[in-house]
Image (cartoon, rainbow, N blue to C red):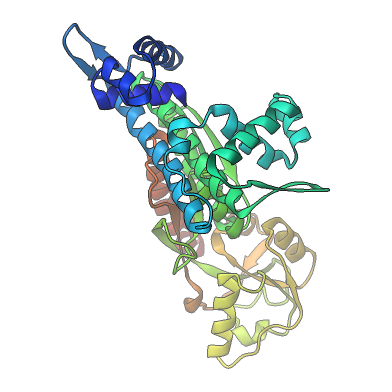
Length: 408
């Protein structure tokens, strides 16, 4: 953080002498900090001549991301003040004065659940972590953890700060990746949250395409429920969320792009009593057991709305499951039915172990696409993955029709 502040000050003051006055550091200290940062990045940040100072391409990338990181920390202070107006308002204490070890302590303790576990995982001693945490709490005027017999749990203030610190650190990581890309390295780190119906085809196909142009990219596919992945997206733990788009969005600050409408179907085991029929009515299906998403999940809601619209009662013999692995296993073991995206059972249908029943469900279509934070500024690799998802969607969305025609 100290080195980044020095580089930002040089950029804002257009010189090292002016930067020293801005951040209350000596000019030699400013120079050393910038030189150390350049050595770490493997790139020059400024063009130096006897009379002028200008930023390089790497310098522009870094300062842009560093300003965004500082904005997140300033936003944390504003949110903390709005959360508790009785506490003294702090301005620029985080962006201008907090140290790396303070943020590292917050992240390590939040991740590990206790100071002792954080010390084992992160390396610093327990007294050092305690001291860093106390310094950070004093700096912002808020307690960040509830200390309990079972460990340490974030306070509401701690949740606010943790989210903003993660986003700030993500900006710095992305700055490093962009500078490496500027040097010709086709890499980067991307974490994509994949909801169930995108894990089988859309996301794997998009990643395969991405790696053709970014062979050194480190890609992680994170699964979970919508609520878990949404929190990870807002915290900066994942970059992109792929899956069903919720409308309206449950929280502000999100941008969603629809890629295709999901083709929902009723699925059965290949030897199910209804699997051999050329025509099946929805009413015929209600005499059998079901596997459905949990109450409140949009697909479950739309399915039950369709039943009501047709004057039918909701199934009574229901197993609730959010794991596609469990749903497949239950389908193949008995006479139950499930309502699923065709994309989730694409290969099982091709292999002949599951069957899509010929039931018309036009009212249960769902928009599928990507969701990112509204303030998300993608790295070249992340932008390429978004493009790859758009291209993969064209392939995947055409497959149900092709499968019905016997082409696949």
